Image (cartoon, rainbow, N blue to C red; front, side, top):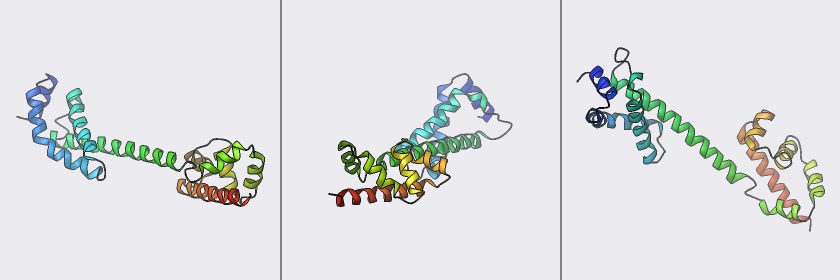
Length: 180
């Protein structure tokens, strides 16, 4: 069956042709997606391959048999979907990392300071920090900016902001423990 005939059959919603197509190209698409989502769980790869076939089923007219083979077209769609999924997974991983590092190392220090209404004392301590640590801590604590926002607004690398926040929290912890 030619690529044009397959496309026409999918336009007519011929499920048998779609099943044949899936049997024929699943291995190829799996390899394409796996090459991009190397460290992702198997379910992510499976879902991405299924999304590729579903996209073709939903919009077979997007494929033009005169421009490329069906095999190449499906591989290209799978590659794009895998890249999108990879980006989504990386954003989720980064958000989780930010959530975990958000004062993870010393939440008790900050809550103790706030509970005992020592905000003024805390501000004085932070004012002793060198720049840009002072500005980063103030933006994080008082303005509620996330590390990504601080990074962007101060033209610093995200990793740099995370490191400075970590060191500043360590300094606050030491200060808190030694002030009693």
